Length: 334
Image 1 (tube, rainbow, N blue to C red):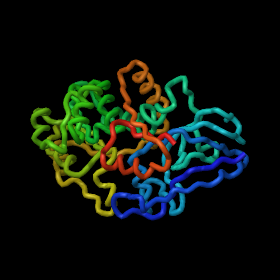
Image 2 (cartoon, one colour; image 1 turned 120 degrees about the vertical axis):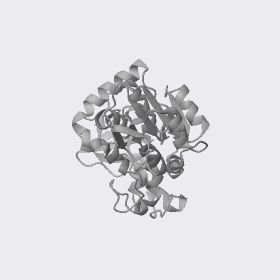
Image 3 (cartoon, rainbow, N blue to C red; image 1 turned 90 degrees about the horizontal axis):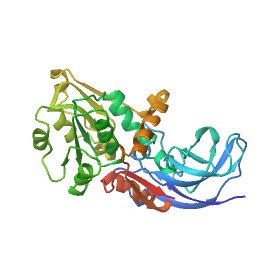
Image 4 (cartoon, rainbow, N blue to C red; image 1 turned 90 degrees about the vertical axis):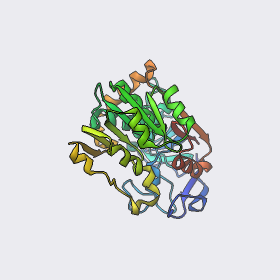
């Protein structure tokens, strides 16, 4: 049996912020299964920052091909299986891409135990690009410890909102989030229990950091880069750890990425700046998932989900992510 697959394909590579002209909507029948493959009805796609980098030729993440679907992680249910260990109805996680049905080799899919958490949590709180990324950035790279003052940029987004909470749960004495707009700073303090938040759109970030962290910053979890990174570098203390998770302010012009101009503060303060990607921690995924699941069940960890609808809206959701028009984990229900 075949199904009509609704998909978004890449028509042309963007030269700045992607727009509708870079994408095409297409419908076609699913291909018959070969041995070792699964036909999956895609339920939810995670709209993540890495997707933007796949639109550029030669980017760090595996690139989208002209005329092909866009890489995106998702969850779905098996409709047909010709692979051992997978049955109709199983929930699975993997690279579903921008489509409503996916024919995939079974080795690319992980069967989910939804008794641990609801399916959407495997894209959010327990997800590789969200909860686990935040966990390893704070715990393993940032090495947050009791007494630390931690600052998180892009703090109202999926990874940032998790990173700040994990810092608090790791013993940080003060967690400060940087986000755009009063509704987001209120969300950070009132719902996620950040100690304070800075609205970079309406406040002077450097001046507010001086007020909120008069003794300096021990750990900075950076999702944004640019001027905010420079503001923080001027306020680090001896032995600070700067964690580079991403730099969304730079993604629209990847050939013109600007590095920090205040990097000499690292030498002055005997501090470090370290980038990371979650897949380097694959051997430790079980540790992270177990801890995140415990925090989620206890209510110590909150993951707000913003769910939009329709695979045809995939380009609009990517634009929403890049412009900061969302709260928490942005998901697209296909």
